[in-house]
Image (cartoon, rainbow, N blue to C red; front, side, top):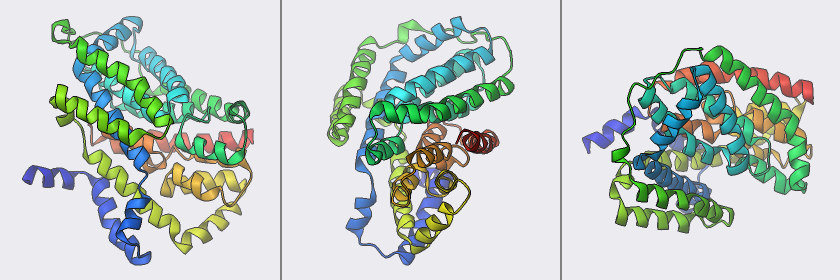
Length: 364
C-alpha cells in the first residue's frame, strides 16, 4: 500500500488530474454514470492491449536483436536519430502515432541499453516525429479520423490537403535533430545475449499486433484487449505485471476532466473568441489544443467552422508545445520511464510549436 501511495504522489500529472476533478464537478455537476460515459473506452482498451503486446515483444528479447541490427547500419548518434525519426513518421501515417510509439520506444530503450547512449532526447524527438507523420493521413491520428469523417472528403483528398503541412513539419523536425544530436560514434557497450531470447513469446506477440489493430478498426478494442490480457495471464504472467497500469488511469481521468471542461459555458465563449483570431480556425485550434489536447479540440471546434483544412492543420500543429497537446506526447513520456524528461520535452517542443505555427501560416 505504501508503495502504491508513493507512486501516486510521484506521478504529478495524475495528482493534477485528481485535484482538478472536484473543481470541475463543482462548476459542472455531473452524475457518476455520465462521468463514466465521458471516457473513450475504445481508446483506453486499445492502449491496454498495445501496452501488453509491446511489453511482451520487449520481454522476448527480439527488440534488442533488432536494435543491434539497426546499430550496425548507423555509425553515429545523428544518423541513428535521422533513421528512427523517418521510420517513426512513416509508421505513424499508417498505424497511428500511438501504435508507432508502442513499437519504437521499446526498441529505443534497447538501443540505450546496448550503447549506453542517453535515449531521453531521442524519445522526445520520436514523439515529435510521430505527431508530424501522423498528420499526413486520415488514419494517422484520432483527430484526423474525426475531421475526415466530418468533412466528407475522400481518403486521398484529405491526404493531399494535409501533405504540405505534414511534410513541412517533418522537415522542420529533421533539421532540428541535426542540431540536437551529435556525430558521436556509436559503440555497443553491452552485447546482446541471444540465449535469453523467447521466440515463442515474440511470435505470438508479433502475430497479435495486426490482429489487434484490425480489431481497433472495427471498434472491438475492449474485447480484443480482454483476449490479450487473458492470453498473457495464462501464458506469461510477468508481462501483465510489467505494465504501467497507472497510465490507463491517467488517460481515463484526462477524458473525464477534459470532457467536463469542454462543457463549461466559458469554453463556448472561448471558442468564439478563438475563431476571431487571425487565421481563426487554424490559430484557434492550435491554441485550444494546448489547453484541452488536440483530439477534444478537434471534436469541439468542428461545430464552429467548415474550414476543414485550417482546422485540421491547427489541431496537428497543436500536438506540439505543451505535453498535453497530444496524447502521443504523454504516452512517449510515460513509456520512457524517465520522470525528469518532462522539462527537456518542453525545451524542444515549444520551439517546434512556434516554428510549426509560422510554417502553417505561410502555407495557408
